Image 1 (tube, rainbow, N blue to C red):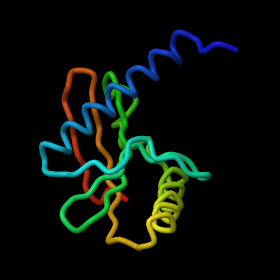
Image 2 (spheres, rainbow, N blue to C red; image 1 turned 90 degrees about the vertical axis):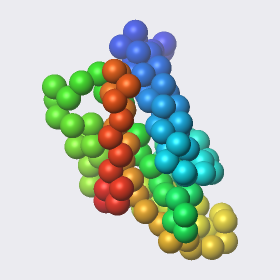
Image 3 (cartoon, one colour; image 1 turned 30 degrees about the vertical axis):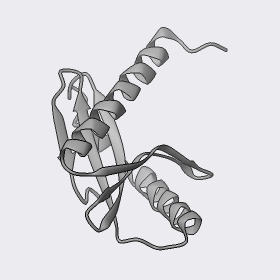
Length: 119
């Protein structure tokens, strides 16, 4: 069954937001290690290096905050999934890094908010 126009718009908006978030993080001195890192538990939007920390980044892209801040959509379930994604990453790389979980909000107008240690 094909995606609805609304689903396609969300996917395009999300991918554009991830690209803007990666560019923003690079300008902040982060090294991007992985985009859309897939595991059996789900996908991390971005895995990056910030000095001595491996950072797992959830990107939330929105047109506005009419229904709340984008970061509020990172539920406990999503946070638990990210912890499992990080464990998979550590098993694959053979080392347990000093890790952090960030959220980057990207708005359609180009505004970006970065929350370090978001969960």
